[in-house]
Image (tube, rainbow, N blue to C red; front, top):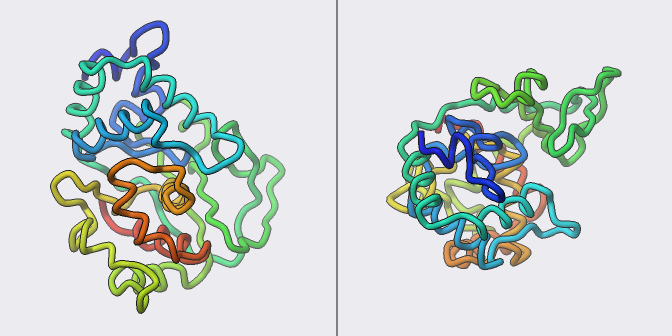
Length: 243
């Protein structure tokens, strides 16, 4: 494990493993890096550094502001070492997608949701509710943490149709670029089995031109017609697959 992943570099480069976990599993608040192409990871760091990758806020999300600051402070050697390390790791399935009308009540824990300490349930509405199965374990940066993502009923089937057919012109089949199993091709990242919360944010950010890097430019015509419900459905289906 490179030192920049394990310890970072004072004063401004935080250890990559402190947020993305040392095995690259990440969480709902950020990206799972395990198995992503090294060139893709390096390009995202360049996009953060140049300002081409932002959050569609306002306000800007804390994790995005932090990544921007780290990217500006990181050396090329830091970035290449971290990218090579995370790309060498095998992605693991840590998210269980559950279709439902009713979800456990939740509360905000800094930058992610956790089950409410008061218990209770509520209607899911048009949302994805993704929570760690053990909030304390996740807060302690345990790479064995798992998550449950609650999605509206019917989301997975609708998302599968969109991903495989494009929904009669609504979008482009995901398999064309991300591969038949959505596990990526060459420098194009795999998206199967990743956090649905993260996927929806990225689709929305690209649609709103907040992510404007070279790879995002290719995604613009793919996402421009997607509705909020389409984004949820696509993310639900993609996340239900094995990475």
